[in-house]
Amino acid sequence: MLATLPLSVLYGFASLVGWLAFRVAPYRAELVHNNLKLAFPEMDAKALRNTKRDYYAGFAQMFVEIVKSAKMPADEIRRRVRIVNIEGPRQLLAQGKSVLCVAAHQCNWEWMLLGFSLELGYPLDAAYKPLVDPWAEREMKTVRSRFGSRMIPAKDLLPDIIRRRDIPRAIAMVADQEPTTSEHKHWTRFLGRDTAFYMGPEEIARVTKLPVFFIAMRRLSRGLYEMAFEPLAMPEEKLKSGELTERYARRVERQIRDAPPDWPWSHKRWKLKKSVYGARR
Image 1 (tube, rainbow, N blue to C red):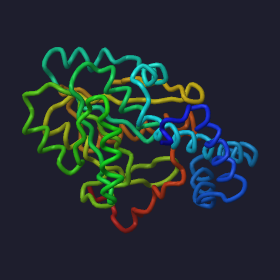
Image 2 (image 1 turned 30 degrees about the vertical axis):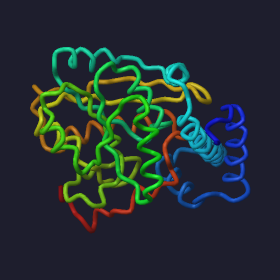
Image 3 (image 1 turned 180 degrees about the vertical axis):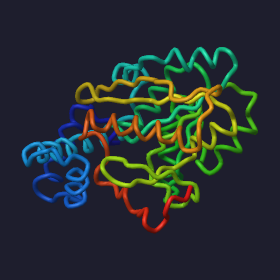
Image 4 (image 1 turned 90 degrees about the horizontal axis):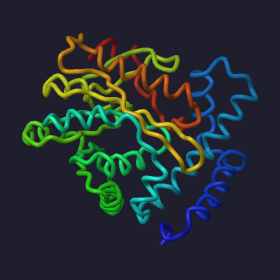
């Protein structure tokens, strides 16, 4: 029912929620403040406050955009998610080669998937973490697969790629989650902290020899985004262990620094401590 409302009405609701979350009942206020302060020590008090305000406003907007995407027509998604530099993956797919595309939780990653599904012109498989609630799991899978993408639980992704290796397709992953359940971690300095990164994309690329592209997303204005595809690693490159993950971490960090409010600062990203795990990978 909410998805049938005009986006302008939903944005009005988002403005109220964002204001309340910032001024009246701040959501995880201390966590957001500390994360931003550590990542951007050069910010003065005014800049930090403005970034927090814009973060809450943008996150509320993304929430209603996800709700609206359940009913949004394909042409509206195309208009609101501009895609550039998709020729690189398309050329490889036209040659019968699959590609691995990695992104981060920047801007609206749900619209990223829908826009990618509409414009690619080839099969798209997307890794995801199943939700605990059966109703939420069913509804989110329905929305995410509206335009033909195939959702695969992350733990099943590599076996699925190997099993269907004869089908040229794009495999998409959002890989900036903290690897709390994975034994394979890459430690690096990220946003001013020792940070563990999930090595799934690197391990998949090593086993399958797939070319890897980074999907950069930026907000142009409210409800308007741009996606760009950038080569991250090619199969012919001889990379050391951790090098692909390091490239990914550096690109994600640059994207965040270019637009600080558009990354989820209220997420508990730094629960793991290097002093406990050392340099294990």
